[in-house]
Image 1 (tube, rainbow, N blue to C red):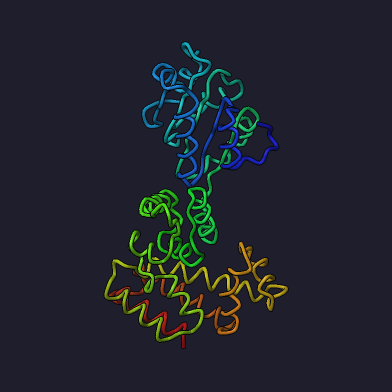
Image 2 (image 1 turned 90 degrees about the horizontal axis):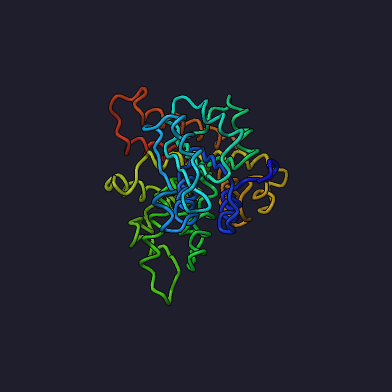
Length: 342
């Protein structure tokens, strides 16, 4: 691939499906989902089943040195056009000098896949990374932003001939978060439950299959706060206080912080009276997604929003034990909701 090419998960998969292979794939970053997807596809599709016994090698970084990886990568394939060498957990390889040297002249009959998880490769290895870009594929798998999760959910289901409404997608995103491996596992469970004649994922389906209440959840709590619905907000908080397994302060604080942080930014939008203008300013995927921020600007002053953000930070610190010897999480959450709504 050319050095100037914008390397994305989709572009890599497109080339792999077209059987356009690079001699080196270096996959690194905090999001393991995309790294696993690319690695698994190469392992399952590059070689024929009867070619894999002699030409596909899977190694683990904690068990091998860089020199051993290079020795295997330098081998010629047996009765096949190419061999595949996959290094999982490559972040555990301590000394990488041999690999760095290999990248300057990789074996063309080898597809070497390096899976470096739990973070990026050390940025000081610029020459190493630049060389990989020149000879193969360098892909950083980044954690998905929370605001992109509903779109990811919709697209994931759409590719599998199912649909979901905006509210249900947000409900799943808020409850499960940005762990894409866990998220897709839950979505697969939902897909299996859908009848062939009705492939719609509704809030009732989400409640039945994932266990997220359609009435008492983070999405409904945020909605109550956005609209300053005191009764509903307290009803939801009391529900969670009595059912701690259904939700906790640790999942709701990031949800509320992200909303009020974006709401504060919305006040500085050049066209803050326009739903489209606010959506564009906040880089939301549609004007519909800006609706809650338009409502929030009507119900909360800019000064109040700043004070709320400060109080959320304070409650977050207390929930972690800072200057808080004995106040339980449920009481901290009630304290925060009262402050926001009054």
